[in-house]
Structures are given as C-alpha cells and as structure tokens.
Amino acid sequence: MTDATANATLSPPPPALDAGEALWKRHALNFLKSPAAVIGLAILVFMIVLAVAAPWLTPQNPYDLAQLDIMDGTLPPGSVNSTTGYTYWLGTDDQGRDMLSGIIYGLRISLSVGVIATLVALTIGTSLGVAAAYAGGRFDTILMRVVDLQLSFPGILVALVLLAAFGRGVDKVILSLVIVQWAYYARTVRGSALVERRREYIEAARCLALPRSRVIFRHLLPNCLPPLIVVATVQVAHAIALEATLSFLGVGVPVTEPSLGMLISKGYHYLLSGKYWIATFPGIALVIAIIAINLVGDRLRDVLNPRLSH
Image 1 (cartoon, helix red, strand yellow):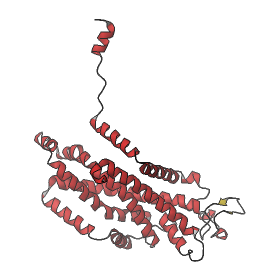
Image 2 (tube, rainbow, N blue to C red):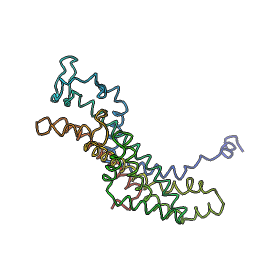
Image 3 (spheres, rainbow, N blue to C red):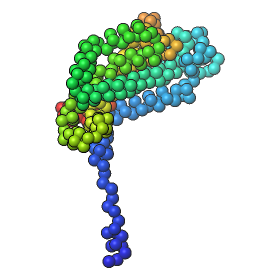
Image 4 (spheres, rainbow, N blue to C red):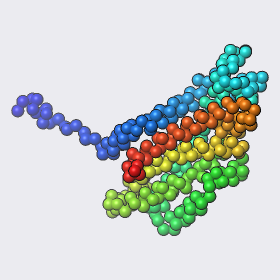
C-alpha cells in the first residue's frame, strides 16, 4: 500500500454538517429570496447603525439645552444657522432642535424601548409558558387564566393604566410594555411546547431520568423557537408603535428625551400653522421603521412555517 493510499485510508472523513446548522442555513437562503424582506432588513440595519452612532453622526445633541437656541425655533427645511453655518436639512422644532438630529436620537430611544421590552417580555413569557406546558396541572391552569384575562384587554389600555400608576420615563415605559407583552409569548410557547412534549425525544429524556431543567431548556425549548422568533419580530414593531402612541398622548417618555412619538406630539400642534416638518419627518421615520420590521417578520413567518405563506 502506498503512503498516499495509507494517508487517504487513515485520514478521518470530513465532519458532517450539523442538522440544526443546515436547517438554519436553508432558512437564511430562503429569507434572502424575498427582495422586500432584504430591503426591510437593510433599512432596519441602517437605522440601527444610525441609532448606535448618533453621538458621532449628529451635529447637535438634542438633549443638551446649551446647544439649543430658541431663536432658531421652527425654521423650515434647508435653513442655515447664522452663527455656526450649519444647514438644518429637515428644519427645527419650536425649541431650535435640529430635526435630523432629533430623529436620529429618537430612533435610538424608540428602537431601544422596543428591543429591550421585547427581550425581557420574551424571556419571562417563554419561561412561564414552557414550564406550564411541561408541568401541567394547577400551575398551567392558573397561568393560562391570567393570560386569558390580560389578553382580553387592549394593550394600549393596560399600558395607560400602568403608566398612570408608574409615572413617565423610559424605564417606566419599558416596564409597562413588558407587562403588556409577556402574555403573548406565554401563550405561543405553551401551544408549541404541548405538541413537542408528546414527542418521542421528550419521552426518551424522561425515561433517562434527566433533570427537569435540562429537558425543558436543552430539548423542549429549542424546538419551540421558530414561532417565538416570528412573534418577537412582530412585537418589536408593536412595542415601538405603542411607545410612540403613549408618548404622543403625553404619558410616555418625558420631553427631555425626544423619542419619535414625542417629536410627533410636539409637531402636531404646529400642523395647522403650516410648520408641517416638525411632525411629518418623525412620522415618516416611524412608519419606515415599523414597515421594515414587519417586512422582516412576515418573511420569517413564511420561512419558518411555509404552510402559512399560502
């Protein structure tokens, strides 16, 4: 036997692609086949980059009162600051805040509120839903009655009541959105977990006397992730829209932290006077962000559950 033949015989075969990794790669390729989803994802990534790099990209910090000049208030788009020579491409609001800088910082707050609230609510709702489906019995019954009770009320009504008790602030808005959203995840993951709990691999794990926490989080939960990913994506857009609504109504973030909803609320009073840009441009940014997230969420739904695409 030659050395080349021996090396070929003794060398280990190339590692096979993990089934889970292959599945997610196939999902990624299917996702990229949708131009609308790719455009939505590109817009979303661009907005996230703007929000993260806001302190370095914007010429004005809308939080710094020392940088605001009321004499520059309600300037139309394209106006030039006589002192600094800076062009207000999107105009200014009533306090002299550069609308472009305000929108970029507003994206930062709106996206942060939506993502943080969704992640916390996802963690709480998923943990409770999986535990209820696996344990069953009285805990499952009580949890589902609480979920049914909460979901019977409109989310905006629950958030308004909570903020009336908590007060205004970004942290208060996030806490209210978490309380509003956790029930969606609990119900979604419980339905998926009830199906998975009856499968053979769960029964095999029980027969092996594996710890309950390992069965739940190592075997049961990963197979419930696809519907959760879709719900979480849609709920991010819902949380952003809900925060904007609460801020527009004057119970969300304070005036000193201009989210997109707060900017729209401030500009609403100037619409009839012809100063359209104060409310219009933040409104356009909010609509684009929500549409981009929904495009991504719709495509994820079709990819992860093809039966719902028809």
